[in-house]
Image (cartoon, rainbow, N blue to C red; front, side, top):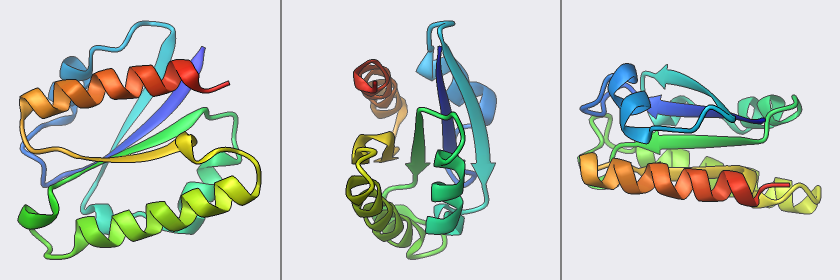
Length: 124
């Protein structure tokens, strides 16, 4: 069974239950949805610590950069994700274990769900 954590910005126009429903994952994928006040709250240390566990991947759902309520939250999160991905590559763990998506609407969220499922299947 694949184990995922999905962090999502609370400023998105979706509640936890709505995200879970729209993503519609099969039962062989265990998901933990974690709301965060802003995607800027994500730190490199936190991401690495979580990936030390038996978790297969972390996904982060953020507001679009142009509509982030805190101004630069999505930009900061993107930089931290990119830096953490570099570390994962250096460690030989693969940067695909950490992916960030910007969510603008429900159609986009459904596409993100399909992308996450595809990435889960490719993780070994």
